[in-house]
Amino acid sequence: MSKKLLDTDSPVLAVDVGGTKIFAALFSPDGNILAGVTRPTQPGEGVSAVIDRLCAAISSLLGENKMAVAQLAGIGLACAGGIHTPRGVVVTPSPNMPDWVDVPLADIIHKKFGVRVFLVNDASAAALGEHRYGAGRGVKNLVLFTLGTGIGGGIIINNELYLGAVGSAGEFGHMTVAADGPLCGCGNTGCLELFASGHAVERDAAARLRRGESSVLRDMVKGDCDSVTAAQVGEAARGGDPLAYDLLARAAYYLGVGMVNAVNIFNPEMVVIGGGMAALGDMLLAPGRRMVAERAFSVSAGTVCIVTAALGNEAGVYGAAAFVRDRLARRKN
Image (tube, rainbow, N blue to C red; front, side, top):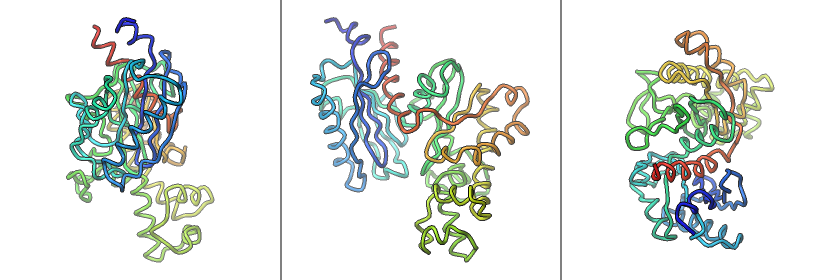
């Protein structure tokens, strides 16, 4: 079989390496998941242990489906952190994977399996996945915010994933939204991630509970203020708890500031909100929509819609598979 036929008609194996789980999936040439396996990431055990589990997930998926690695068009990896895409290196860590510094992940997996490997940031992969298979199908220009422990982002321009010079474009979580704000772990001050991420909501909730402010959250966490989660804050806010509502209103305000910036810069048809915080729905999005309508440049504000992601936790693996196809097609042209 020719290499050209392999590129176009062979399956792709894609892996989303997250802070909690590793999800590996086989994709048909038309973008459907044929099979998948999940393994715990357990990043606290170190980089080498995570890579071993990643390799085991790939081997298991191939073995269970009686497929040889030579039958694959390639492997796509979506991983959190600052990614140097041309080199295939995880350069800087993410909140969930703090030890991942200068890890040549693509080369490691290539040497293990002997097939072409392409590495992309997980939020950029999620944007590509939503564009091809989710909320952004048919949309030429979109930006995606992923709201989880931290905040990531991805950019689609004229139907193509925009990565910047080396792959680190779309770090929306580290745009400045408060010039005199606190210091962020990235070295900047006043980053969006400090105000609108799940960690920010949990941090602020714990601080206010420790100060003795009244809230049903105190009963929900049985007095353990530091154990409060963003999901619990959302549940309390839906029930009318003033403290929880105020916490989400603050996060929504700063998310709105970030969206205004993105809409003014990129003039997208769509802003997609993904990640765990997206489950809060209009409690988080409605204030942002109002802020974009009121503050963004009118031409851009009038052409954008703001929606929640459609693919949930699978957006990254869908995007990683599409990234392989795109890179192989680019090499042919």
